[in-house]
Image 1: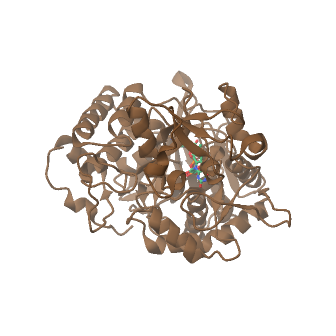
Image 2: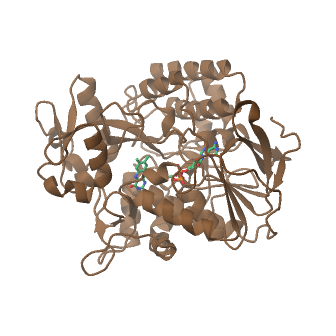
Image 3: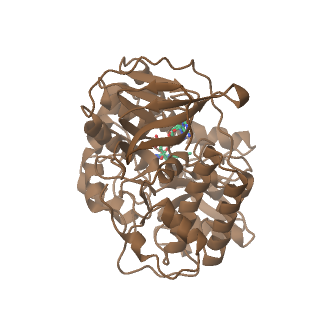
Length: 531
Ligand SMILES: Cc1cc2nc3c(=O)[nH]c(=O)nc-3n(C[C@H](O)[C@H](O)[C@H](O)COP(=O)(O)OP(=O)(O)OC[C@H]3O[C@@H](n4cnc5c(N)ncnc54)[C@H](O)[C@@H]3O)c2cc1C
């Protein structure tokens, strides 16, 4: 437990950790109820949110329906999606898109002035709203940050590195955060009776990832260290087509390219997905990612060929991907883009109910750091920004009026940008090698031992503890799940169990698994708690 030695800020409204789509949208939906949003990097450009390319799914097209959207979500979830949560997600999607329009998001329109809807893999209908082709994330986060800045009840604080939750009598009452670096740094305790985690995912714990360095799983780690129940941590989605040009993080070649007809070829020019799945390149993400992984593991290379399907329209339709490819000397108009799978999205997270409540009083979570049960074992493309919006609004509804008092006047320091350092190399390499696309008990046990070794070497440094805790939960969940399902693929347990069951575990469970990896039964992890 850390101490803030006199530096205490009373945030009498809600305190939100994270300024991606989840944090900013929740703050806006809370208004005029006061909200203090603290984040490492600058609101409007921080988190995975700003990097999202494809867009947001919502049943807006003629002939589409929330029922169809929910059915696609559940089908992608490989038996683990919670149908009630998926129904809620799909039903509330159109209203949340309306909210974004009201805040000023410049979604692309068709010739008739209606919202232009794209089609992505495993969606039965065109239902993805986007901005300038592949700039949805940047446009939405910038819009929400501008709206938050002009909302008097919202205080946006940047440059704070959150480290630990403060818990008193079984209730979360605050958050410790460090401001500044080295000897100049100060530890501050932000106190609030409503703490909302919106801290994003753990992708950067992997050596090959599409996520920014801030996505180190620290919110998840903090929550678990406070005793909060974590759900489905083993389910990490690997995006099939990160651009493989040796950059860290790896730039993404959005799913929408395959939606627009781009094909995957190996270095012999063979369109190998035709032999893997009836939907070829539009098969579920895990199927495509594994097929590419196997081509590469055989010593081959894989390319996304957009030259025929998109060709000269590429720079205008996909400006972000075009810029990334051209920066690496590849012209996607005329040349296939080299691709490889990369850690992309976490289906697991803080176990939350339909109002984003976590298992400890005083704590809510939304966005990628939460696990609502919507995504099950595999997220449907463009459902994650949507989940952040839908459950951010629900958290706001629940917290609203929860403690309707004015925001405290404890003056925080002036903003200073925080550059998240990448997690230790040994940790990232372990996660990619042994807790990656294909997993085996031997590798997972090796990973748990390596994570514990990194943790011990860190001598209790809280940021590192948060990262090793998140990594341990992912590896322990993966070892305990003795089947292959969705994004979790065990080479030693290829079967899919007849009765699907979500994982719910605490850090104590993960520690027990790390200490006794050979234990035969982890059955008690599979019980749904009440949040
Ligand atoms: C390249 C890419 C493309 C994607 N494309 C799409 C898409 O098209 N559609 C879609 O639906 N999803 C997409 N996703 C996924 C989606 O972007 C994320 O799941 C979503 O944006 C997560 O939002 P969030 O607000 O939960 O977290 P984030 O946007 O990651 O925000 C997390 C916030 O928490 C802060 N933070 C974290 N830890 C700390 C700490 N210890 N102290 C202080 N601050 C901290 C960060 O600085 C940041 O402000 C994509 C992801 C990537 C990486």
